Image (cartoon, rainbow, N blue to C red; front, side, top):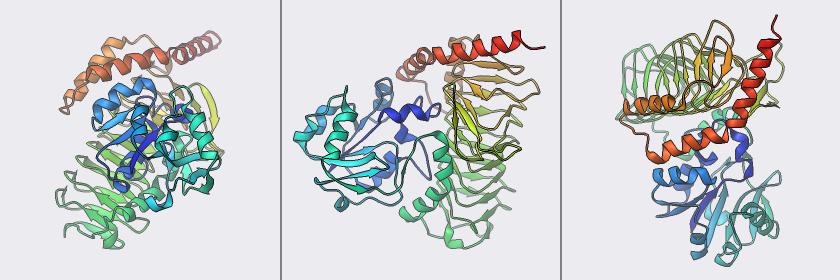
Length: 424
């Protein structure tokens, strides 16, 4: 059966890390929901329903997918999955029938539609129509949870890493003889195409560790499970604490704890990154550090799109959008939200917790006077260094996002100006 993964209206709540990608491409564990579905339900073609401004770039990245093509759902029975669903266990085709629908806390997780039902779906009222069809079915409990906020991904990452390790069948116990393994060797998987120098320690006493192909790990690196290091990544004398996912083609040094680096992230140098999610093409300068715990151990509130949201948890770091650059010694406060294409130039003080997209920070002050054209040129140069290119569609998306985030940016700059006026 063909399948389609879709975004509902709550996708907006996953800003800033989902501003430039569908929510089902966000990582938790070894991969995102879309890649899990491809493993579980192999198909020559599949579909995706995404926010309109993401469609061109997503179709470019996934030419095999039918993007925002509701007509294609009418050609046969289709499994539809909510992109915010984080499954706890593998869903099997036998679990889904035309008589049931999977829900979690009142939110639709999955449903199978017949062609005549798919004909009822339109973009304007897609979510309402789909929910109406689902509520006419026998409601069953879907495993797992719905991802509502960025910290949900970070908080679930360790458990999801353990589930993925078993689900993907990667427990092969293959590793180089000079790697020091603490714990069971069956909880270590190292690709034969990975290169690991002497004096590397892998600790699996708290969970499994998997290292993909074309990874290079330098001596004196320590990796604690559960952890996954994706293909093409290089590690430089790093300390990787449990609950961490390092995405594809990252450059990693320093200390990282319970964080997700989506891919193409540069963190070469010393500095602590904890309970954070970092998007692609972010460069963290030397000694860039995140606080992830308040001194009074109270729950952390996070400024998402300018609104303070209580995370309900005491450990929250930073959520950093695509193409953001930080200079040396940048210090992020607990529960910080940093948007797309920001430029951080620290001045020896804690940075503002809310830095909207396309803003710059100098000596602790938020402003929006860094030229967009210069930011785009910087992004193009950074991607060329990794043999990638900023396509015309991706550039148009950045310009669209610049316009869409204008109100948030103006509000933050106005607040910063008001504080300067009243400063003693």
